[in-house]
Image: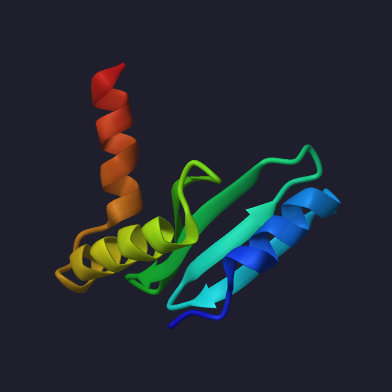
Length: 95
């Protein structure tokens, strides 16, 4: 079970005050920009380098969905896949 709750997220979004990197645990992080954009990121390390994978925006992606996406990504990372680099490559390929 993570540290964040839906009530926490809704309180921060309604307040409109920027939130920088509130951790839910296991690398899953919630941020709220000064412009009001709320997003989920997964922070991880690979080859001694810190990496971040953007999972999506809140509330389009709920806390539960973000946890599931993070768990899936962590499984791939454990197998040696750099999920952020893979996402960037996919984006370039689609353009």
